[in-house]
Image 1 (spheres, rainbow, N blue to C red):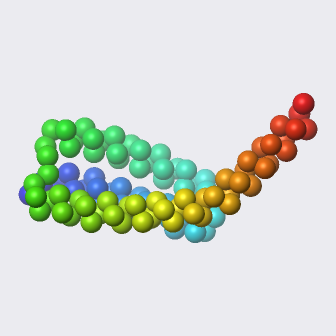
Image 2: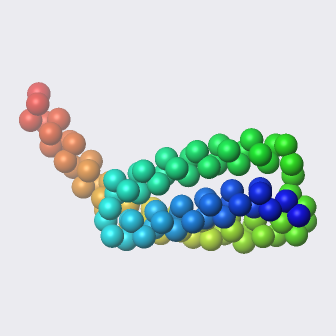
Length: 99
């Protein structure tokens, strides 16, 4: 089995879980920092996956991991919407006073 490749998926899952916890706590700076870490892991995963495909059993594990990542992502997005709306209002207000 190709465990090193699955390690990337598991690391991305852990980062998404950490992002969700930070989002639940309203720590958006940390969410953004973790998002950067996820992007790096995804880039590394793409490179590694191009060289060695997953077997059938690993693909099933990957699918379960990806489902958990997507659930985390959906909740993060729900939590982020009010924050992004507030940020937009703040930036719009700042832009209005500059002109």
